[in-house]
Image (tube, rainbow, N blue to C red; front, top):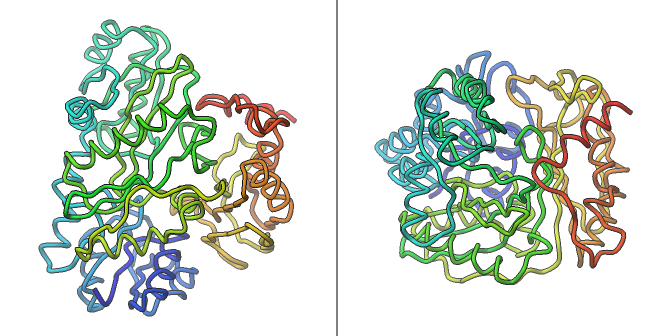
Length: 450
């Protein structure tokens, strides 16, 4: 590989461009014209190709335009980042058919792992812990599954990830409306995945890397329990307060699933840990994760450069990595707390980033950037690392206090409240936290009311 086209925007596109520079590889950015003209990732790349259009569907989500840009720029490889086309097996196949190196898992693997029922069956075959689940194509089928499994159940679009369209039905009466909501989120596609729902569960992940020889390493665990509307906003590594046997089960299951799938590249295996100790596999995200920086901070790996190596056919060369310290990531969005954290638009007038020991910022914007909600409202990821979880959170409180944005409202006040909340940051660091995937919703309401 010599020239990589980055099929994305924002902080992940900038992150990949920087990794290309570190690896002495040329980078080509694509950008929505006019929305992203002059964006950070555009100026960071060696070359930039415009994608004319005013919506994501007309630009970053148009596979024909993106592939044409790669060919026109003379790229020999393509990195999709996350979101947009990253999990589209047809696009991955088109990239390889055009003679380019796809920096991600094989198209057939993306296709298999995109089917949540098939992935759950694969996980069950290799001995991973799974919950009862089924693909349903109507409200009647969803109701039938809920009667068999018993409420509460969760419904989500059968294809796709990232928490979009996830709806919990707590009673049989709630199922038809929950199914309708999930279908709307999927653009009218009727196929949904139904599964038993674990109350007050923690969301756990493993960051994995795999090569073409069948070697799989779990480089770190993560906890992503602080979520709003099933979207992660705070992530940390390693997953804290885990019994040794749970950590072991996560790693064994993740390696077995990815080996059985024939995986190559970076992957995230997701699990739930119920309050009663039930551990259940959720899904595999066949791409680089939004949360990857915390795994980088506690392992010393550059995960983006590792995806370059693995796509080029190099052997992994190592196994599971020992943790060195603790890292926490806060996703900073343009959101209006006064309107229920609704996405906000505007121009970034002021932009003061935190710094100091253990502080890293992966920005998506800078002074003068225009935030257009249709293209995403992530402003930056703040990653804070310490020798211990307590030190990381102490530094995080300082860094969040230093972080200032003017021109658009943000969720920084919520992050400041979370980093100081005893449920997430117990005064006694030897005591476990008490947060779970549903905990933050009341916290958001309380912050909004105040």
